[in-house]
Amino acid sequence: MTQGMARETERPGGVEQHALLLAAGVAGLAVSAAGSVLGTVRGLLRRADTAELVAEAEQDLIARGRLVVDRVTTAPPPQLEVLARHVTARRSGDGG
Image (cartoon, rainbow, N blue to C red; front, side, top):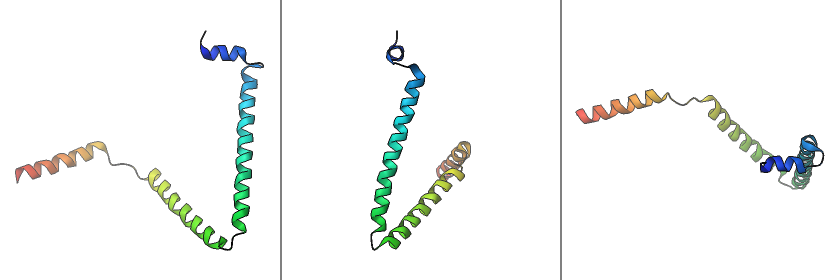
């Protein structure tokens, strides 16, 4: 019997209950994180330089968005074309 099978037989309620408990744990973690984020946002809203922080955050998000779009939409050059250019450059350098 493998270790994974041993765990399944030791679990009261079986796999379904285990999955439910895992999902509940993840949800609890998400709620906790959301509460922490909300507290941070409240603290930021009390600051005098909130408008500047929002503008900086907006610029940061725009820059990150550009990076993501560039990464997703820009296809790398074809491998054979890169190799052919490299060979051509090497040959032209050796012949001169």
